Image 1 (cartoon, rainbow, N blue to C red):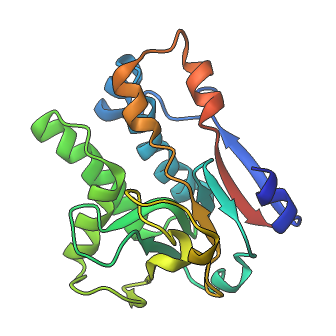
Image 2 (image 1 turned 180 degrees about the vertical axis):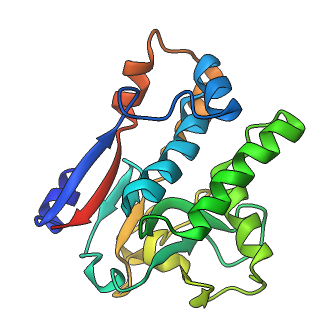
Length: 210
């Protein structure tokens, strides 16, 4: 998070935790909280925070390398995590949106609908990619779909989750580097004694231009 304050000194950083998150909002959040599936819970909380207040959501394993200010003209933006099409084609570890954006609302709705119908906690990138495909996404590359700007992988994910970081992966167009901490995998292997422990590790923040 130090890079956020260094590169974005005039942005406000806000933490979302169990004190201000919608833990009882719906069947999905109640079940994720009860089962201590913190990464799954954060998938919904980030959407709720953006829909309610707007801003830029960042995973805490994201290092900012240049200001997001050029992207603030977009009403919503996010990025491909790799060129090859897959279920998790577009990621939400970096996600910016105006308050009340319909794309964010649809992602929230589908997250809960899938859980109610199938009892599954779908990954955030799967939900995001599904909604974008509903909107017509069918090719890789910088594009705009109904008020959503989808950026190439090098903007936010200059190396893939299965790869290794190298300074050479950072391009002039790169805004940040996601280091793929894979906290969702660690959750399957261990349980923490309290929600505060894991949520403090996974502080979710919104950066808003002052």
